Image 1 (cartoon, rainbow, N blue to C red):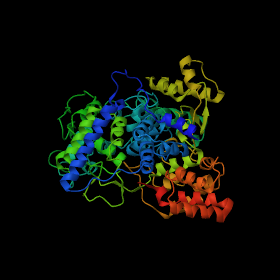
Image 2 (image 1 turned 180 degrees about the horizontal axis):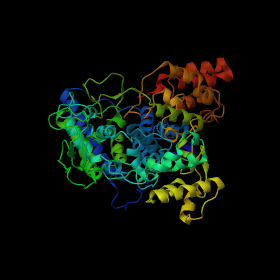
Image 3 (image 1 turned 135 degrees about the horizontal axis):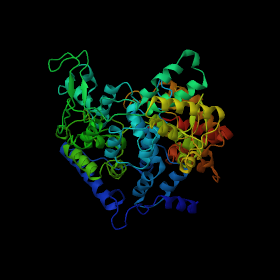
Image 4 (image 1 turned 120 degrees about the vertical axis):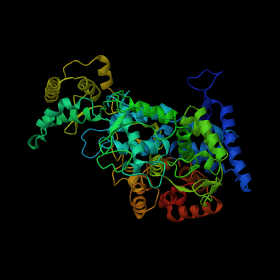
Length: 639
């Protein structure tokens, strides 16, 4: 047993930084920098307590820290082996080592993917659209896996243009996901990246935000005006011909759909016109309906584009303004979102409504967080790593609500229900062990006709999209369609694929259905309504941050009669039962179940209850204990 613990413990030690010279480590891998930055944050929090004449909370115990760190950093509870390894190690540096281990694990990008999907409303498809957003979804996930810094991530989304299937330009899904709703898309962009709520100004001057007028909103919208599919007009006549109701179920129509929605529908032409016409119902004296106005930013450093020129590049100008010319606002919103992710509540709330630092309860803290975000070049992984290393993150749980209106009083971590994704990922950990060892969902770039993949290993959507978007006449589009139709009917390709294309198409596609016991980040987005994720409040990806942690009766019934009973309580092959291997006494069995499920050892009183249950219920005793612990409030809440 001790040998096993030592092996697992070795995984928790700090490894050499990757990709950096040893004498000049990255700040995120520099223990001295992390310690100094964490201390600065704790000092600001302690100063707040001193001003309020309050005692600083105590640091929580190892078991609470273990579960909290796992759920926050990687979105799941530890496996039984991970929990025992940490709890049984006698090393004063083990908390720091655990944080290093978690922030370098695959689980980090998985839980950040859930966060980003919710924030950006990433869906696999949309109503009335026969294509899919597979390449955009994959782009977001890959960017987070590669730890793309937040300013670069934001810039890539807002300035995107081109082929939706090209890995280098698939970020255009940010706009094509909202095709036909450019004003809503812009309002969401301002909310997501700058914490500015401008949605009301689409129709009228905002009565709640006196600084936002309708004219200003349309000046801002001018930066992104002209979000058209690239060259889709070349296929319009062909599409109208094949769109006849009598042809809707034909192979011809299905193949045309591959090009119309699958390629053109995911592409984004233009670069942002920089000018826009005021709507026909415009009602204020500063403009007239139909008047063409130029782009102009409403705050921060002024950026203008004239309505008299065809310069373009409006989206690029917008992206640059958002990330570099809005003063502290971009960094503040990013820092506050990460603070909320780690600490459970934003320094200011709502987290997507920016508040100037000078107006906050603790301006010194927010100023320090903004400075740290900038110093780390918007590296969200490094920023969260600092927060996880603070004493503030390690404060004892506090069941009482914050005493500071619209913000955090830091008086211990607030108790919160697990998110749908945290709960699901924790349940599958109990059922199957470490889910991060499973292959992640890969890009499915196969061509689908009648919901079945065709030309597998011969041609894929990346190749088709590249070839279709290169066509510059209606005649060439018709010729390509006829050629692709022939290949689908015969099951063969023209042989024009390069060796590199063929290598890319020969790889195995990992695609998980709704019933797969894999991470929430690998499942369909959003989950179907009958899924546990939906029942426990996963966002339907319609609005920004649309998830909920509110309880309901359906959740209880789902736990009693669904996944918990089928995959845990009644499944003798579940990973949690394997944790009992080698346990020779009832006391050891109870202890291991507690450590595996609740990540702590039982109290003396609990041990007595559970031992009595094992004696009374015999072979059903273990299953009854599992059911009770998983259904408990302690399991369903994050302390």
